[in-house]
Image (tube, rainbow, N blue to C red):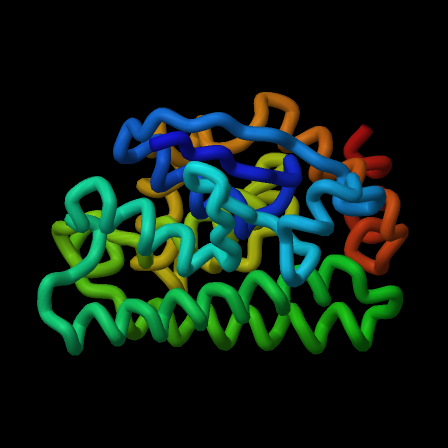
Length: 225
């Protein structure tokens, strides 16, 4: 079986699949495209014009949650709970994580303080919900690493860029989220799920938006420079 992942270097949704592939040591190829100027062959492959896309022996899968479940199922299925109710609840939290990533994008592209604070406050509320959901175990489901962990990890990586300059995690009020995020970011499969120049590319992308968040970051960096 030949697996070929189509990616954009700073896309958090592609990173989910990359984490699963690396965590399970699955052989694959990866091709990076520019989403601002996607090649025609990609637009023919992707029904939504988005990444990730996974080619499987010529067949095409899209949507990160679907791709991740498929990758897990063809390699043993141990990243999903066996209990149907818990598995369904995990799927719901994976959707929750997707919503957080969407809000994060809207926050970092907001052009004024009102828009920025609206999405920042919404994300903080979501993080507090996750704090209430987490147990005392190492991972989302306790002792067992799962696809739910791969779903949240990209948010934490984006959140931690530039020595946590963009972090919305308050260790005092979100101790479980804080500890979980640090465990995830220390995991080799997460560390190596992005290109080496990820942080630079991320900052360049934020700068290109010239958003309120970028202006605040640039001003703060200048003061400390």
